[in-house]
Image (cartoon, rainbow, N blue to C red; front, side):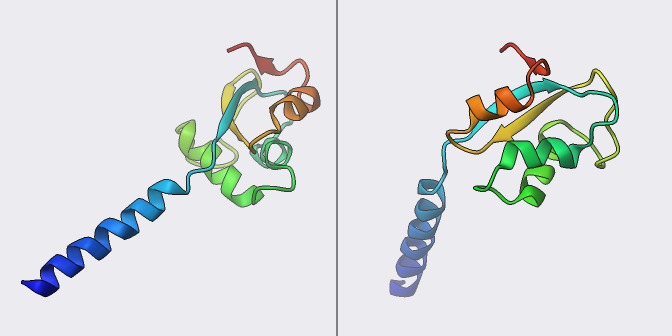
Length: 100
């Protein structure tokens, strides 16, 4: 019984640690331009603080896309933005950001 209680406590502590490390995530909705790729958008959104591959995966998942070539001009995509970079990304993607 003692080991069960210890195991439950250890599991509880691990889940609390995982939940406590959630960096605040910002999102912007943008309209895709002709010739633009998910990788290009992810590179702008990530900056130096995030792994571009992770951002690509988040874009695909958040927007219900099956692959990186599954976008078309005019499509609205929700982009995860590195914390504190929203204004920089808005400037870089000027004219594409959809008002929220």
